[in-house]
Amino acid sequence: MSHIALSPNHRPLGKSQYRVSPLAWGMWRFAGDDVAAAQGRCEAALAAGINFFDTADIYGPDNDEPFGASEALLGRVFRAAPSLRGHIVLASKGGIRMGVPYDSSPAYLVEAVDASLARLGVERIDLWQIHRPDMLTHWAEVAATLDGLVAAGKIGCVGVSNFTVAQTRALAAHLKAPLVSTQPEFSALALGPLFDGTLDLAMEMGQAVLGWSPLGQGRLGDGDPRPGRKQAEDARLIRVKAALAAHGQMFGVGIAATAYAWIMAHPAGITPIVGSQNPARIAEAADAFKVTFTRAQWYAILVASLGENLP
Image (cartoon, rainbow, N blue to C red; front, side, top):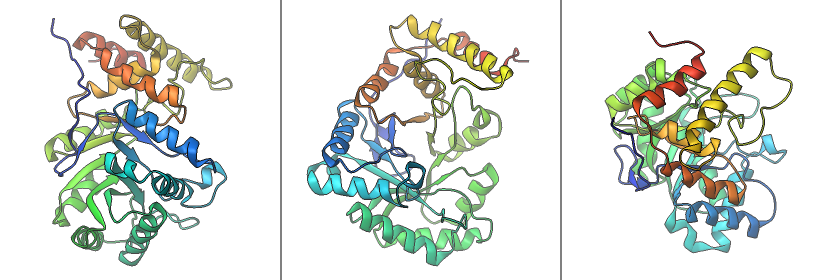
């Protein structure tokens, strides 16, 4: 029986000039004032083979910090250790405004990119993504603005996050530059992209797929399920964790690494965004490459999540 094996080798980021690791490191919880510790986390990701860093201008308020705080901290790390920038494919996102909530108007997109560049202290963001779709801006206007930012050298390439299939197609139809990536929530507990066409469209268009919250908002970590959840949801979580744990034991890895591996085994080449800020946990993410799946084993985890057999 054939096995689906994973490779840690870098690969193209969609239809772009960049080559990225199959795992990304997410900076939603990248916070604090200790620049040396922050640098240590960046170096832990690089040591784990991860060269693909994903941040956003909105990362900050959820950590009781100002808008842009995560980007600003990374900018301080780059100033302290300038050589790091050359080892990183840097992704950021914009288009969410506090209290609005979404704004993809041409003026604001330019303002958002310029502000991110200033906070990061860089001349170009390699991948810049519309964080969430703005229903009040025509896709032709969004596309023209993004194409202008690419032409100006402020961003290297363009992606989207939390877009539907129809929204992705509509924006791509107006862009001159390729729409190189899409970023949906995806995990063994968040299966929507398998069934709503997101992954199929990515394979059709040659897009990279970045899966956010690959551990189901932390529920698929190596600890116990969070208390206080609904009984039915707890039962599902217990099933999925048991299935992942049993499979991971065959390779001597934990639940989290197995969860990343299950995501990466899909033919869309999904890149899980590792959210941990713990250097040891970041290092353990590379254990995912020890894991293989037969088709039956991969589908067994899907069935555990669905709670019913496939047709």
